Image (tube, rainbow, N blue to C red; front, side, top):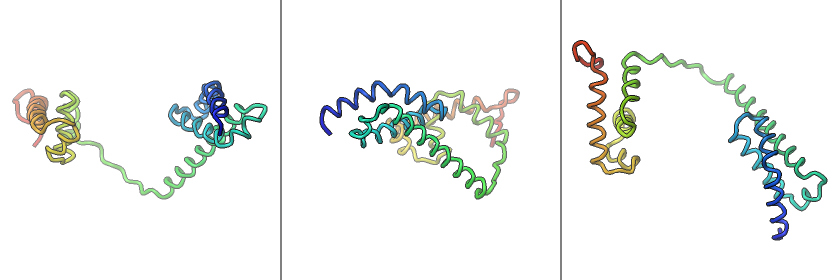
Length: 168
């Protein structure tokens, strides 16, 4: 394509994007999905720009393509959901016990860096060195966070009347 066509398409895109996005958003109710669909329609327009530019209403063509893409996505998701409903084995997870609920509540009360260190090390079973790599910090920092986090959790999980732990 020529620089003139590129410039023409860029102006077209800038002028028509808000309305195309509004249409796809109205269809999907999801901003991210709407942006993806609109972008896909513009990619199709660009790949056929010499023909699309000659239309009386190229913006209408783009919106129609975006609308058809949205309907196709909706149909595919319905087919997939129906297939899953027919073929998925129903397994229900038991509700969390009191200990788990207390632990989650206590974890929410400690600082986030300590919480991440404890969850990654003790619940995800990652070695301290791997936690340090994921957290982009020294191993000593992770060890300090683990120590402080365990201390804070011990206080939060202790029974108030006698100070005995609520868990084993």
